[in-house]
Length: 231
Image (cartoon, rainbow, N blue to C red; front, side, top):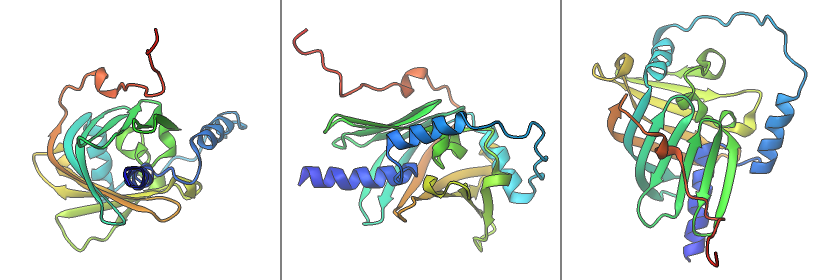
């Protein structure tokens, strides 16, 4: 039974990362292949300017140099987990789950890593291969990947983020509430991640603290595959 529960948690967590289609090795190989592909044109057409609330969301993400918050994660089966989120630009995020959940998610600036301490397994993807990149990359291009959704509520802003050329990366819908005390007048309420298999995982945030000091140590982790016994 514990292994079954862990498997369900693992599936929901991978769906959260938006990386369930490709294995970590395949994702890394795809990333390397892309990096060795023929260079694109040196002078791409300029991107259109962001306007309205989409521009406000871009400004919020650029102004959010760091964030700490409590999170609640809900999967498609209704299973709920909680924990602590720590984010620091550029490229760093940590999901520290509640006691009793032997998993950890850490992005260290280049790789997004999922560690399962119960089975001593480590899975890794390039950060840019996950929709989460839009939260931790201030250069993320919402013109190319973002679409403003109609929420029917003037105090709520929702943006769908996905790469139409990479459906295997999944999709993320970010939800913001208007809050004058938060960067650019928006507070990140949470998001819904949908992977290529249509597995849905939602994150809701609370107790936000923006632009606070976050040490490098928050984005380090203990490798469960390494043991010092017998030494």
